[in-house]
Amino acid sequence: MTCNQALQALLVAFFSCRLLRLCMLLWLCLRPLLRLGMLLWLCLRTLLRLGMLLWLCLGSLLRLGMLLWLCLRSLLWLCLRPLLRLGMLLRLGLRTLLRLRVLLWLCLRTLLRLGMLRCLCLRTLLRLGMLRCLCLRTLLRLGMLRCLCLRALLRLGVLLWLRLRTLLRNIASRSYGSNRPACLDGLGRCKLGRTPVIDGGKLLVVLCCRLLVL
Image (cartoon, rainbow, N blue to C red; front, side):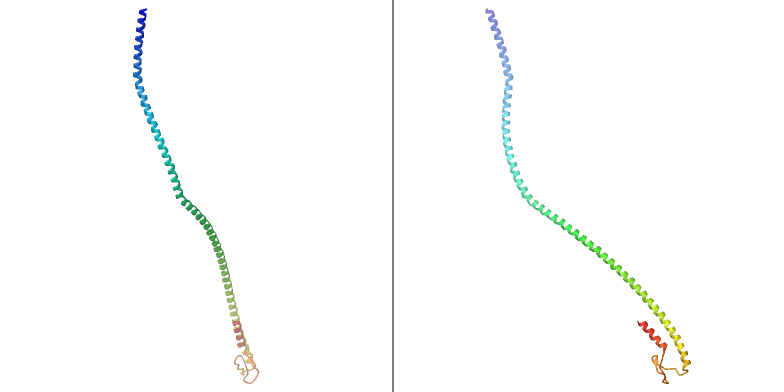
């Protein structure tokens, strides 16, 4: 019994030494891990603090961004309001210019139609002038024909006058002999107191001159 107890005691002592050694090894292994865990905890704590600081900074930046947005919005509204008014004025100006352009087009169209009417009137006047020229030319030709007719009649009258004069001389020479009447204008009294004798040649010349005057 004593040997068994001694063996058991030795075995217990041996295993206890082994366990102590294992515990020491585990402790030596876990000690760096614990230190690493502490370092990780410190890092995480620092990161959390940095995250809180970043969150506060982001909140401040967001507030500043909102303020800047409001300022920019106000500035844009103040700057764009005159531009919008100017755009409205430009729109009204363009609308007025378009209306003026339409009115100008209508005026030009009316002037073009008036020009066409003027051209038609001038063309009509030109045709009337040509007709007038043709009428004057016709009248001139008629006048020339009248002159030719009168000239022919005058020649015929002169021939008749010469013929009648010759006949009257022959008749007077046969009737009165050497006692021929002496008349002033184709109508006079004979020297011997006989009846007046009309000179036919002079009378024919007077009648032809009156025809020419007419």
